[in-house]
Image (cartoon, rainbow, N blue to C red; front, side, top):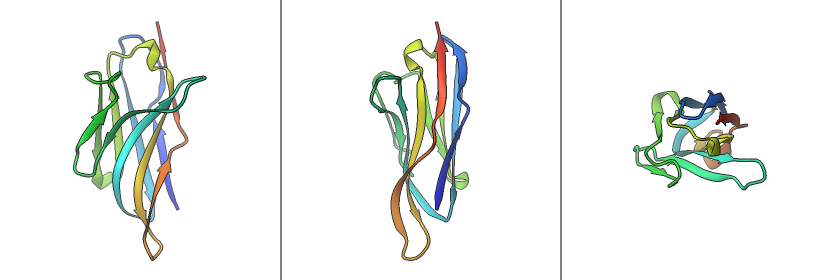
Length: 122
């Protein structure tokens, strides 16, 4: 069983910053791509940023230049540094990971965290 747990959400004023973390735990052999998604009330979940195991990143146009995704492979952790936050960034933020895990034979699945609320006031 693999679990992803996010932390770092909260309430911040527009223009402020937050740093989200997501730690994967369990019988993990390796983690391929990891990413952050968000879902605002009444809207569909959307991609925010992804990062491969080799560090190649991809961002939604709405966050380019403001958000930075990074990861620490040794700690099975992905981060999202969010700067210059706007009220429209308000959402529940979810991390996910494509994980190769035990028991044998190893299997690869996509796992999601439970989400962390980010609220940006104007």
